[in-house]
Amino acid sequence: MDLFENIQPNKLEIDKEVYFLSGYALTNEKALMIDLQEILSQAPLRRMMTKMGFYTSATMTNCGQLGWISDSKGYRYDALDPQTLKAWPKMPVSFFQLAQHAALEAGFGDFEPDACLINQYKVGASMGLHLDKNELDFTQPIVSVSLGISAIFQLGGLSRSDKPIKIPLTHGDIVVWGGESRLKYHGIMPLKPNNHAVLGPYRYNFTFRKAG
Ligand code: MD3
Ligand code: FE
Image (cartoon, rainbow, N blue to C red; front, side, top):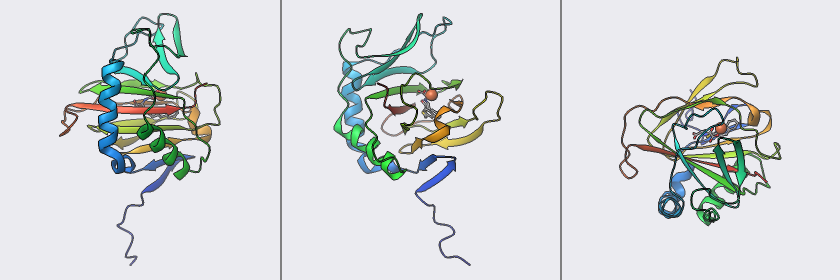
């Protein structure tokens, strides 16, 4: 009988170079939530239109040097918020350091994120299976931070037809996606009704990238 068999390791490799850091963002929870409110006041959440003419189910904004945007011309990164015509809010030190520490924990020692996409999901919102391939350097990992109500994340394979695995993501969880997993299909299932004591009936996801 192994005395430690019921203790959850705080770092789990759930797929090739996909590292799950359970509750890792809770160490700096207060600062993250205060800095989030400040970003949202400067660069409001909005739906983005896709090239196909559909609006995203999640609302989005960005902080950092570059922001991910989508409109009728397609997806890209831009230094300016098309809605305010101002630069995106600076990436808060609390965000940057958390992303760097999480990447280091997963073995990526030189992660310098220049973009942080903030997605807000209300109950019922979802994100269909897709690839993230607008970044210039695929050797850089992606770090994602989940806050608020839980969601089921779907991780597929390199081809759209690969059957996805389901991973529950809850308040404070961080996932680092590196190597070939960086280019796998992924998505978020429709959120179930729930409420977070501080953030309300919403899930926030911060996706840190080296985009430029
Ligand atoms: C796995 N967002 O914004 S974050 C996205 O929870 C996006 O809001 C989801 O997918 C969300 O593009 C998932 C985690 C994530 C981000 C990028 C990935 C997982 C990834 C790229 C490759 C594989
Ligand atoms: Fe994605």
